[in-house]
Image (cartoon, one colour):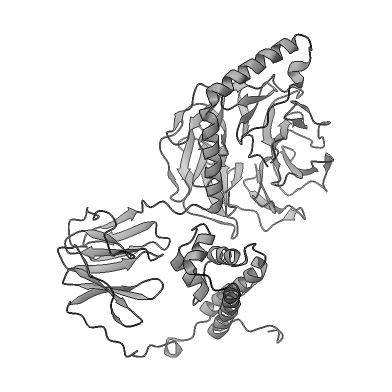
Length: 599
């Protein structure tokens, strides 16, 4: 029975009401903030969106994407203080839209169109037309091999015709953000035009052998499809997208790092002098070497590795040299390693059921071992804010620990019927993912420690590894059935095709920091990089005896722990080794982890 106190969101009318409520509130905020120009709004987002998109969001004639609305609200308020208010309005409009589409009326009662009394006259025989995404222009083209822009407010042709084709034009299409117009012609070419200047945007696209009679842009603009009578071709945009504001900050930090590296020779001489002084003092103080603090530096300056020899080693990534002596104290194989988000602690798990925390600066144990598991500890992961540590074990449980007190937080997480092989926190910390020998992946609410929905099933064998995409919308899993899968975290459904290795199980996965690549470890010991968007291999495999994989925080390096006791660093851009292997372990290397960005 319907609750009479609840609003009716089942009709198209209520859908429009919800959108109108969002539009009224947004336009009220826009007026109160002095009605800044759309170019100014785009600039306030660091050009993460274009001014035409800003215009469309403010007009709100149709429901904008949440990411675009979020940027506009932040640009108008300056601090994002009203994001929750607008998120609620947007969700209400989205839900109303879904309900309205599910209950569309019959064809006889749907919206119809009446003559608008507007007639555009041209001397061409018009064969193609398209509206600009913001609706202010109409492009027409035909047998005269030219394109006319019509201003919908007047309506008269706006500016000079676009000319260049040598045959009739059969198709026109605007880029989704309106900055380009694509035209297709009898002359077997496609031309791109800058809609702001009316000038060609680069050379014609050639390759078709017959008249091109249709074309269309992908909704996000990164692909253009064109067709003749016998073939469809896809063209990929070479325009670099406007970087996200956070990416700009990362690039600024990289620039500063390059400047520091320019003085490397001078710094090396100073460091050599300091080391000489340190060695002199070490002769007088026996324990000086082990007490010497590790300098805290840029993200990724340290690499931690663990292995079958029971040791944990720290490496200087720049020099490829060990940092001090190995960390000892484990009495069996060390399977897992993870840095605390601020880099001051290191967690390791071993085959004797214990977890140890280490002070990275002194390379000494930070308190007593964490005990409670009844079998090998195979995985460890810190919560993104660092207050919790999750540990996974062959005993079929996951335990959460308070990092400050070193005490368990609540009861263990149970539900899997076999060993738990991997654990990972969602980037915002609200979810925890676990992978098990029973072939399932489970998501847990990190706050309540309860299952978050049903397990993810579909793997035909045990699941060795899990990793969240940096923006949290995808989860990658690696299975003994020789496949890696991508899952939509919101819907819990598989995304796209399986990623299939060459030989045997896929036992490790790791996302590139910007999310465009996924690294996997195949059963034959090779590492592979995959394009997350296309689900296709990105270049040739990285060959070796790989067991573990991890990306450097800035994404330029991939570290692999190998079965021959070595650690290799790979240049992600070239797929070639970056220097000689790191040697020191006397058995297989099970874990690799780079130090995180400094906070």
